[in-house]
Length: 81
Image (cartoon, rainbow, N blue to C red):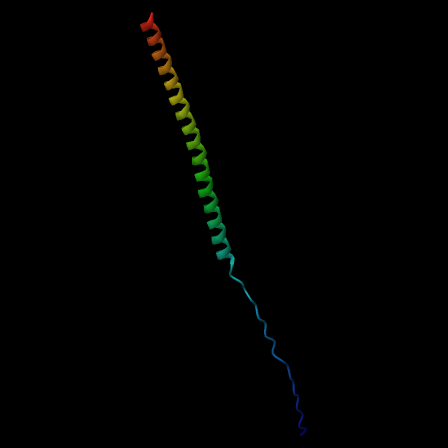
């Protein structure tokens, strides 16, 4: 009987798979930036609208003062004649 030995040496292979889970935080930051842009646009639009309304109010008041001055002038002219 022969004593035959087979020795097999193999190194075990270890595979490491890294997964990064940062997609949720990037999406959250993107959403926050989008919300900030919408809020800024809303305020800029309202500021422009308010300036337009203010201009119209001042113009209307000036016209009213002008019409009143014309009426007062006509009344004074009529009283002096």
